[in-house]
Amino acid sequence: MSIDYRSINILENLDFFATQVVEGFITGLHKSPFHGFSVEFAEHRIYNPGESIKNIDWKLFARTDKMFTKRFEEETNLRCHLVVDCSSSMFFPYNNDSSIDKLTFSILSSACLMNLFKRQRDAFGISLFSKSLDFHKKPKVSKKHYFQLMYELEKKLKQKKKS
View 1 (tube, rainbow, N blue to C red):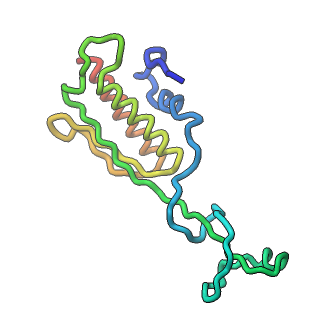
View 2: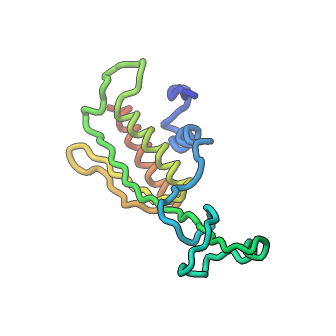
């Protein structure tokens, strides 16, 4: 599915654009290679003598007379920091109506990633820089933080349109 960015007034609602792009994309939270106790059940495996008995599935033992242990998958949390270059080199391609410039693409991509991170309850932050650091916010997990960062991205898009 291709979204025509010109058909949506991005300056009015960057959050709406990001939500439309991300909608239906989420398939689950991050899976971890580590196994332990969690809500997400992974598998049964045969009990080996000497192992801890805390994970033995006693109900399965009552039905089968064989000892099996339960394995669970742990979920991991992601902490992400997005860095966006806002220097004049990001205005390429110049005056080309057929495609968006690199800065607009970077801002739209960052908004979509932040929307994805928000839905997965992952921490995210952002830094915007040109010749110096224009804006910096450490990774957090909250709606207020999300909307503050969206506001900064929208502000950067509006500044770009004026210049």
